[in-house]
Length: 393
Ligand code: ADP
Ligand code: MG
Image (spheres, rainbow, N blue to C red):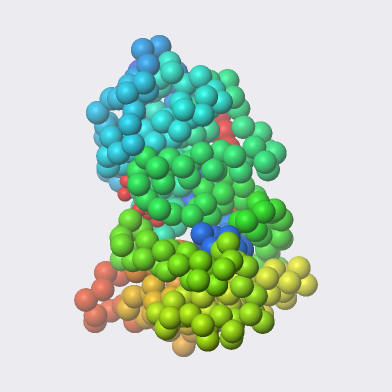
């Protein structure tokens, strides 16, 4: 059953009437450009077919009642909270994401959300798999709260990027996860059949056509089932390392270090910072190369860039883990054109570019590589670039 229908059914069960509307937002994959967003660099995400839907109705008493439909199909309700009382960090847990969005929207004052709302969530973006279930949730809630307040979000890019920024603020400042703006921008701004080429510094964005099937290719997502925890100190360490390196190099962000500048930069930096800079600089260059190849309809040639990205993330940035390495190595050994870990690292998902004919064999070999180790079986699916967030009904 679609997430829309699951949200609708649960809403009817809980409140005995129809909601005023249903809004949804997708999870995302990132073709290439990892750990570049907070270095003011380039990313190339696309929206997944997996979505989070929110059925919603306005209240009058200033409280927000929020429920989420679990895997068993049953709604689980969080402790109700008053919009006026929201403070960062409370509520915590999963309700912190919707509460954080309400907190940001309340303080920005773009729409009057003070009446409160009944929100019923149903999603099928795997949580903690590096596919941005958190951004899908935030963006769907943002659209629902704005929509209930009469502020419907249209197709315009700038307005959507603004909603992404508010959702990002919710995650950073209310939930307390120091992530970059990639996830929310992808969920809000990606469009069907395209990857989004985003320059995080300028906000300039271009929808680049990505039709793998036309070239006999598929994008395989491998969820290692190792729960990444972005809040972990490792992510903050890398981020601070990049900021420190930029400071020592006298540039606003690592985005400002060119490939030509790299040898000189590496010669002056402390040894622990050099590899971080090398990753950021080479990864930005790989995104630009990938975009050139996509524009020239040379999709298969993006494969080796993915593999180089993985090596850089594994060896220089040191954010991979054994399960991600096993998944990538097995995919490549089975004939994938390229593969890499995706997302913050230390778990989550990998992405592989494979030919249609070899896809079953790649799936078989990746699955087999996880057998006989103390690993949970991975979840594999193929993904095509899907629509961004919007109103469903
Ligand atoms: P990712 O974004 O990679 O999936 P995060 O750790 O950033 O991983 O976000 C996962 C968290 O988001 C979950 O632990 C949960 O708190 C929240 N979340 C995501 N989807 C839902 C949902 N459908 N219902 C309730 N909470 C959700
Ligand atoms: Mg997340």
